[in-house]
Length: 423
Image: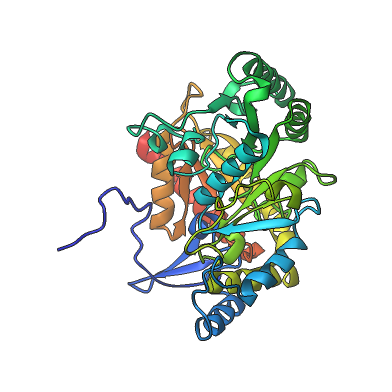
């Protein structure tokens, strides 16, 4: 009998039968509060009626209109609508299927446009599992181990992860920028450096926000050496952090990215990603370098259009900000009562609790127990971080205050049980 790969490990024991809003329902009929959102994908909740209706209509008319063969209206309409949310300098879009593909496309464009080969990525970043994106990924060894040699032309610089270094934020940013300058003086010459790629909030790396001075420092250095700045907003985009784009917390006005990458929450669960750049920059991609069989799929584009309408009309960005404040305040209150949690951080509905032992070292065992205890109580969560000692919460953007409070109550029970079991 054929079976799934044994390497496809499920974080929970749930066999999902259906989803509705912030809930998943198992084959046994049990209801689960889903604070994973399919790793940040079901932005409008599971099976939002307007997204479902849009996809159903599109399935009945055109499923696949391959976009280098023919054009279709959902693709054109989505491009117009997405432009209303993008920074005005980014007025050209290329669609793909996944975040990894979009990262690869952004790197390809940066190398074409600059004529340079090197890409600077940052420690703790996650950009995908494909060979190019994997070479940029350092959130954990499991994404890189055993597949070398990795794609050449990648240099790594520190991300300002203050809790890990044990320094104040300002000192950590000083260190990160100084080390970037040293990297440019020692490992990747400025005239060999095509781009910097960075997440506004580390995702798999532990939900660590950047800040204004760090991102502006990257922008200034990119301008100085003639490199591009790529913002990987795969997980932080489409309202997840309480702003439509995660970087808007730090640089709300003025251009920041030369290339912006989006995926995950863009189409409420349908596979769709995109890179956005200026028309002038996008035109520097070499002929034939952009394309793909399934990119810009008509059904996925219809779902994305409906997603953007729901996000705007139901004020889900504002809800993410409001409920995110409630969530992180509750997580901090739990941490104050449980010394196993060393840090709570995040933006909007992208929050995490980092578990440490009595010596302040990462404690993945307690984090794993807390995640499993939560699952047993009906709260679905995921771990992340280099050692798996961070538990993250990313509920759909439609979550309400009552559901946040329900999740927090289940979380506190889970943490207490995890600590007691490990004592």
